[in-house]
Length: 483
Image (cartoon, rainbow, N blue to C red; front, side, top):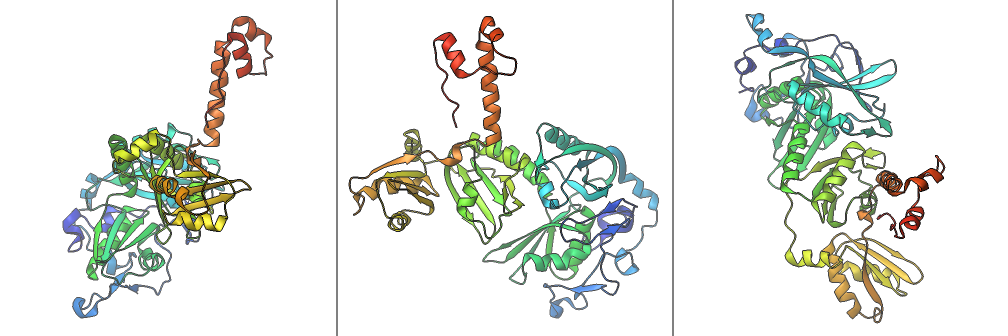
């Protein structure tokens, strides 16, 4: 195992498996330390050790601290007697590294990696040359690099208004094995602190992309994603010496790609959104969801996650594609989307109600007190928002079941006698504005093809044919584009 002997696992010393090479200017996005030329973390010279929250001196004896992965003899490990064997594990090829260019300076590394649907990744580097920022991804396999390149170039990828593009670069990486991963998980029985505490303890091992802390009854789990597999190896080796339970995980980019493939095969209707700022409300999330009517939505502000359940699989796939390649931005943060591999089947009675036009939104025709309406609707389920005008009120629930229950029970309550209560179209069912413009352009192109030659010649070159001109010619009618 890696914790007992690094050399026994790989057959070489860590310093030989991961050689130190000269690199361009490398930075950490938003608040990280910057270093030039040497990829070692910049920590104070007197900070050779760091006490950890897993410190258990009674059971571990002398292993009470974590040694940082510096180049000193204390942490470098025993050297392999025949360094020539390293050449069999390291490969340098043109198809291993892909550079994502035109990355905004303020974008987080994790926001860039949310676009990557392939892996595993050996190393991620931030590169700034001539005031232009790029993110270089070095994969273990050229096939994974080609898969990412093909997926990326098949879409128009936008990050905070910047259109990204790709270039190939020559990279070096070792052969993959299960003990090489930049993603690790740490198990603990309540001694882990916050995400920031974990980051500060593990940062000496290398730049960290993301830390996610899951608090559970039986104990906590911290999912840590470094920017390189070498940092993950150092961290797991030293954490195990301190008595912590640390293991390797699949690269999160690889997991996201697998989850999307499985979800498409299973016709999943659920999309998970991560990284939601704490001050975000449920209405702000719903305002950014488009593509199809929602079955229900669950939001956990403490964990910054939302589970979006659509009524149809095609709607979930449309929304996920937009969230990955266009981005869902809330309070300046780009949310991290992931396709849930499987969603529960809709009950038969709910399917029948959907076919009859049921949604999570209700319209009440008549004068109603706003506070009374909200309090009464809360009796039937979670309410996303209530909008009241002079003679019309609109209530949006977080679930279709809640709206169905309210539509049946509200007319029986005092104060709602004689009022007309009907289902309203879910605002989330509308497409994104850019797709509406594309649909309009396609509609005009189809209309021009249907026009006779004499009518086409009578139109100015800069004036596209309208629905009215087509209906006049054929004596028919083209309805408005569906929202």
